[in-house]
Image (cartoon, rainbow, N blue to C red; front, side):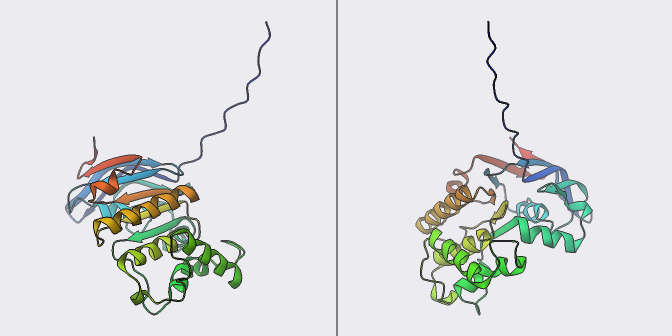
Length: 238
């Protein structure tokens, strides 16, 4: 009898985000406790829950924008509790993209300038070739990917709500972050526009391999996720 050699399975990719028994409160008022979560590259996790339970606060903790009282947050292998404000900001610039309900585009910059901001903040050599022509090519490719080709020269006030949210998605993904955090990204949109925006958001995160954590009240948006987690004051339920 002869043995057949088998190739070892490739190691599983390291988690993008690890949260271990996180607890957060304001003074004597707890927000949430005992929250644990592991998110891997390419995974889409939706977080739902009643208003006031701390979903947006939890999202801020994931990026090191908020502090917490118990537990640990690791972003791309880095323990955020051990990082000072400057180090956290550098990790966010490199590894995190944000999409928010209110778009947060800068009205005095055109679409291309808004989308290109993360590339400028990273500096030369950290995203693409770092030259102005190289950054512009990345911006144009990202606008094409989200269905906004040729609109780079427009100002935000010349766009619809759905277009503005696609600008926000393009800006969040242009530097190819490992983690995309989206806080009610369809909350200001009508149902048909919201569905189109979710199509773009999911397709682009799948294409880039980013992990996506979405906070939402929308059942339609949550149904697109690989996992749906219900946040309560005592952690994730169910």
